[in-house]
Every structure is written in C-alpha cells, then in structure tokens.
Length: 111
Length: 115
Image (cartoon, rainbow over all chains, first blue to last red; front, side):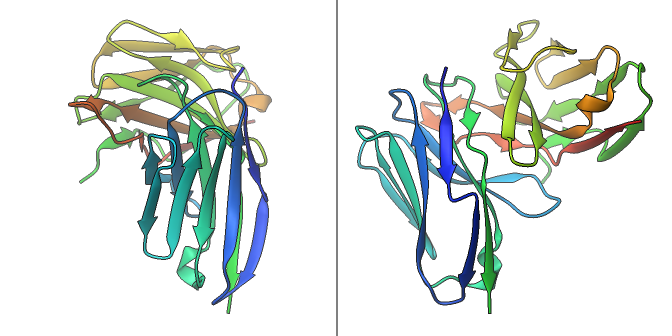
C-alpha cells in the first residue's frame, strides 16, 4: 500500500525566513504533486513533478523530486504572510491513477 | 471559470438518511475521484472512476457507493448516513491531455454533517 508522509504537520514561521517541507513516500513512483489549500477552500495545484531530479519554482516556492530517495521537498524562501495555507503532497504510482495524499502541512507565516 | 462543481457547499443530514453528493466537471476529463478530508488525516480516497459506468474502490469505500452514468457527472452516495461520515467531501477530475499531466482539478468541497 502506498503511504505518503509529510513533515512537519504544523509550521509557524517568521516573515523573511526560509524553510523546507518534506514529503516521503513508500513506493517507486516518479509522479509527485504539490497542492495548496486555503482555509475553507478547495485544493489548488501548485507543482507537478514527473521525473527524478525535477525542480520547479513559482515565486517564493520551489519543489524538487528525488525518486531514488522517494523524497520531495517544498522550499519556502523569504516567507510572506500570503503563503499561510495548508500544503499537501500527493503521489500516484501509475499514469492517471488515483493519488494518495500526505496529511498536509499547515503553514502560518507571522509578521 | 468554474470547472469542477459540487452541488452543495454545506449539508446537514440525519442518521440513516440516504445522501447524494453530486459532482460535475466541464473539462471532458476521463477520470473522476471522491475523497474525504478530515483533520490530521489528509485526503483519503473513497472511490474513483476512469470511464462512464466504471468504478473502482479506493481506500475507504465502506458505507459509500458511486454512480457515473455520464462522463461529466460522478455521484457519491451514502447509503445510510452515520455520524462518522461527517466530513469534508472533495471531488476531483483529471486527464492526460496529449500526454501532459496537469494533476487534479478539485471542486470546492461539500461539508457534510450527519446528526
């Protein structure tokens, strides 16, 4: 059974600081997704990582994938309050297959 | 610009009622999914469908069924609602568009309370 683990589950940061969220998964897969969820809202796709060594960046967020280590990271650079949200990673084993999600990391960025 | 629509944002139902949650997508996606989201547990897959009239069980199908009579519509049915089915339910759809994977598009969610 595919398992996806995120850590930390809760993260409180000061504005301007850097931090990394980790996502480990239990199966061989080269398809890893990051989503953002604002309170009371649905999930929004952030990044799709489809091969070993894939790196994608959008603003202050950068995601990477190491399929050999079965690890993805979401790095936050110089955090701002607008980044406060819950971030989920998700993995699917096969193309177009059902995804399994991590428990989510609730990020709070304080002034 | 709404692409995945869930018919209700909030629902309150009584124990034992049969409950229908509807999801419609306008992107001609082949794949549709139902998840429930609970604090600390992330999203758990209930059922999914790759095509009309096809369905597959996810990780927690007990107490649920689904229907996909048309490509754009995927319904989740709680046969006899129980209080432990109080949750946020999320519908999603996906497709491989000419081999490009865009991930899932989610609906806005239905918060169901069973009393």
